[in-house]
Amino acid sequence: MFGKFWRIEMKQNLSIVWIGLLGLIIGGCSLLGSSEEPITITPEVIEDPTSPPPTNTPPPPPTAVAQVSAEEEENKEAQLLADLSVGSVNITLENVPQCMTPQDSTNLGVKVDILNLGSLPAGPFDVTVNGQTATFTGQIIPGDIGTVWVASSDTNVQIVVDPTNQVEETDETNNVFEQIVPIPTLPIPCTPTPEPAPEALPVDAIDLEWTAGGFAKPLFVTHAADDRLFVVEQQGTIRVITPDGVVGNTPFLNIIDRTNSSRNEQGLLGLAFHPDYQQNGRFFVNYIQADGSTVVSEFRVTADANVADPSSERQIITIGQPYANHNGGMISFGPDGYLYIGMGDGGSQNDPENRAQNLDSLLGKILRIDIDNGDPYGIPADNPFVNDPLARNEVWSFGWRNPWRFSFDPATGNMLIGDVGQNEIEEISLNPAGIGGLNFGWRIFEGNNCYLDDCSTANLVPAIAQYDHSDGHCSVTGGYMHRGVQQPGLYGNYFFADYCSSQIWRLFTAADGSYSMAPLSRPGFFISSFGEDVNGDVYVVNQVGGEIYKIVAAQ
Image (cartoon, rainbow, N blue to C red; front, side, top):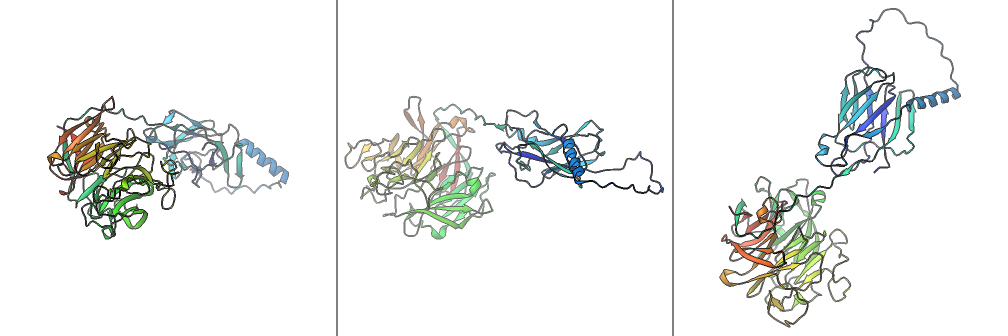
């Protein structure tokens, strides 16, 4: 970055130009050289109104021009170079902070100081920087400096590498001279100071604020690192809620033609946007195809930010399902940039083939893969079973019945998982950040209750919260830890629900590490999922009613 130089082109016998650089970086941008146009100062010579009018007196006869030898020509050029370097050309930083913030970059520009050593014509003349031109209208008497500002937010300035600080070329015929001057060290971008997190306190009550409706069996809602929301519909479509709350008529993605949604736990089940989606347009879905298998595929957005290309599908992984239920469906990128995939135990009941405890099966697991390396994916080097010949390398954790919804706490990186129970117990479990290979117990335990097989099995991870099937409860819907600063009263509370009863609970972690669980709201609709927006606010999905609600502090 800093071993580069700025080429300055001067026309009409301008002897010296000083450039003062206030900025020319935007936020975290570096100063890079790519433009082919040099900075030019092109004076326009105008007639002096005080000069005498022209006369009809014929011009004097031409004076004979002496022949110039090659040696004299070289001496003349050398003198020209020497004259051009008198006083030198400098680039300096003035009134620039130690680091640059986006606010500092709102009034960027180039300050051009022009020193008249006697041969500069009167103005006006133009000063052009990166295609942006300012006109100097005054007159600079010999020995004085004139200043002109050129607004420019383009960091692509022409750069020439030449540490010798010498004149690169001369063109005596056109009076065009170029001098190479070193760029000084620029201020680095400021590291943003994060807003202090609100104090985390347990919530006693919440309200639900209607966001949008009209969806067909919505199963999930998420964001793409912008102010839009994306709603997954079970039949095989994804719809966009714009920042002003309007639901687009055209689906963002329509893959009904390849989605099998004939059974209650089948369909288009999950959506995850690549961490660099705003740059690469890649996103991933989890759906059930015609033969009942789970498919995780990559798609790409089109030039229209609200429409993806169904024909861009690239299948990442396909996993056979022996039964129609317990398909999992959740996919999410973790803080480490890897894609996590939730897989149920294959279905039926009681995991008849004990797949959740079989490390050679992808069922009853949470998988972790690298979708940026490998074809069609790679295995992270720190996956827990990469060196185990009896285990699948994709496995991150095991002992799951049906981890329908899970999420990552942005503040800690911990994964929080809602695992659907069998006959009596629904559970919320926690996988600490960065720790793989944990066994969460199914079918040995249902929640923290001994269920089948040998309940003395060591190293099983207990649930951090559970509830039974009394009071109309039937199936847990895992949620999100609220980290949105726009609702500070909700900060630090994990919200989850039961699908059948619609009971919403909060789970709160006390200072001593213990968890407290409390019921909050019972809106009276089937809660198929939770989701969050780019600000960390949490949403509730009403599957049958086709609506999305935002959790807000109780009024």
